[in-house]
Length: 257
Ligand code: SAH
Image 1 (cartoon, protein in one colour):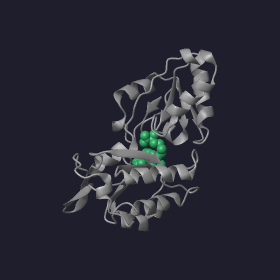
Image 2 (tube, protein in one colour):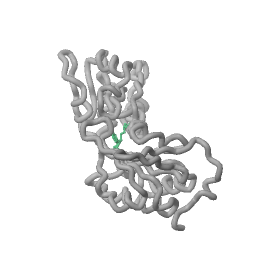
Image 3 (cartoon, protein in one colour):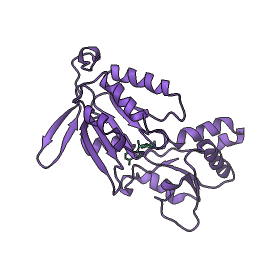
Image 4 (tube, protein in one colour):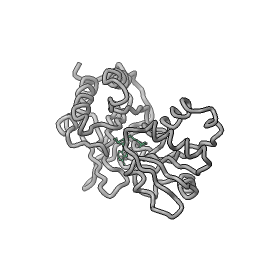
């Protein structure tokens, strides 16, 4: 399993690159496979994004036949991506698959790339949630989000919005406003590491007003109560979260309730 990082080839690790170079078969979602150059002797098996476990089982079947298979994911393969699907297929599959040597080559996940562009917003405690309710009920999303907001984590939201899920990001930001101040910094980091990258540093109130401008390629990061900005002339402010925390989450809660 190989993570391709957020977009630019410069953010692919040498170990991930070596695995790609040694592969006879590449398996993954089409847009990720498109990032890997065509090469003779290497077959690409593109698939839909929604059939992860079947795709994983296909990868294991080819590997059991002795092929050198690489399953590609964007970012890190273990973060809301294919590695878990491969292990799910392995667990459910035939015992002989257990002897297949499997390695996971990490990649730079979207929240780390976004954080690096913005400054150091993940300097304190943070957490990550997928806002997609394709694989879990929306009540689970809101329960976890509420707990994370109450604990004053910086919160990274993956899969914030899509055509099929247009309202979830707005609902999540409304929930955030019940726990955090309207001026809390919020990042909309879109297509980080790609030519169409856009980084927007907003307040929570602005993020609520413009939630519809985020898309599937956007990582949304909601600051903690201590996350702050350093203004710059002619450039976006730096965003950072100090490492030290002096107050308990309850004492720092500044929201509307
Ligand atoms: N395995 C990937 C995440 C897959 S979930 C990783 O580790 O990054 C897909 C979500 O990741 C997207 O909806 C978006 O929220 C985020 N994402 C992936 N690539 C991104 C990029 N280049 N810039 C911003 N967000 C990105």
